[in-house]
Length: 190
Image (tube, rainbow, N blue to C red; front, top):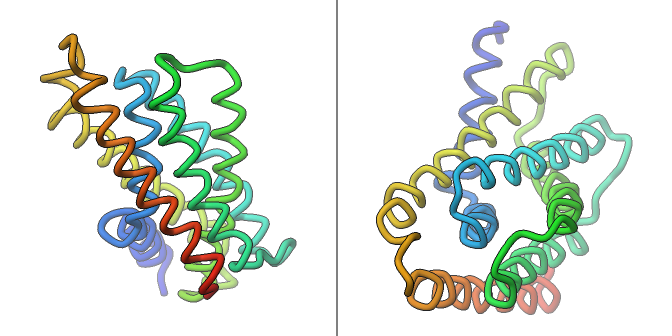
């Protein structure tokens, strides 16, 4: 595999790990989006999340830590459940949310590691493939954010009923899906 092939392949794998394959990842990004639909605030949250999952993914992909999917997968679902509930309970972003997002990013990175290990990484282009995969994931996340912004937030976020008719129902649905995943992933581990 050439250097350019490696970049393209792992970028594509990272992107498709979010869209269309990463339904849990999409839901997590949406829970981040709906607490504050301000694009700048959302991109800051997304960048903190990406920094964290890149760090834990690098540790796991290099073999320095070996994540247990039976622990990581329910924790990923719990992170989605927590942020969805937070959207219902809080009206604005608290400073501690960024710390939580970083922690949740570390957990999600361990989940990415499982997928990346199944795919495999070329030893001679480890850093290139890891960086390309992370950039692909980030572009997938930004696509979700921009899609949510242009489909929903741009038109409705300034409406008085936005939280009540859009944020609360969507967050409730996401919370229910995440709760189901928590139970499923605990009772029926991978």
